[in-house]
Figure 1 (cartoon, one colour):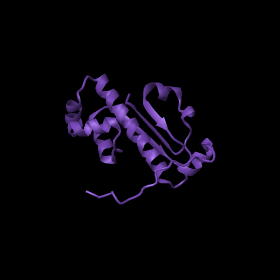
Figure 2 (figure 1 turned 90 degrees about the vertical axis):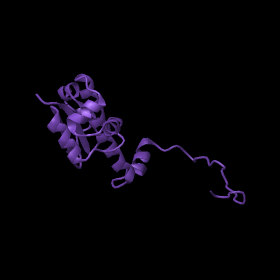
Figure 3 (figure 1 turned 180 degrees about the vertical axis):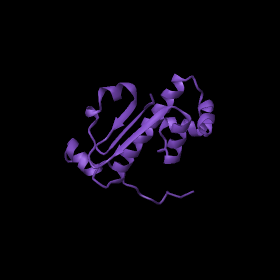
Figure 4 (figure 1 turned 180 degrees about the horizontal axis):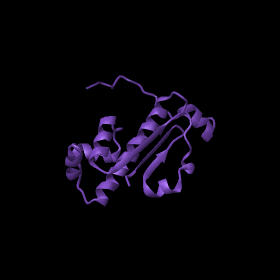
Length: 142
């Protein structure tokens, strides 16, 4: 426990001189090698996998426990996966694809087609998302 009785903290809010434009904000917070950019990519992957697992469970009437037994995970791990709390590692992705008929496609490159360029059939048949450097889609194999 800290004694803060002798501390003086200035909590006066500062007023911004002007609002940042979207381009300025992206340049500042999503610079080529920024931590925010890496987190955005990771969260895109985690969220897409989580939604796909949830959709698969719903489509096949599986509980989190039953899905966990199918892929070799505990129920809390499945819950965290569905919430997108962490980016699944390669081993987890392999276990999911081996135990289910899910096909995971991940494209990473300097410039990936923007979201609006994702083919309509892919949008309709899969769970997908994209940033400027990551495209991920998850669908049931045919």
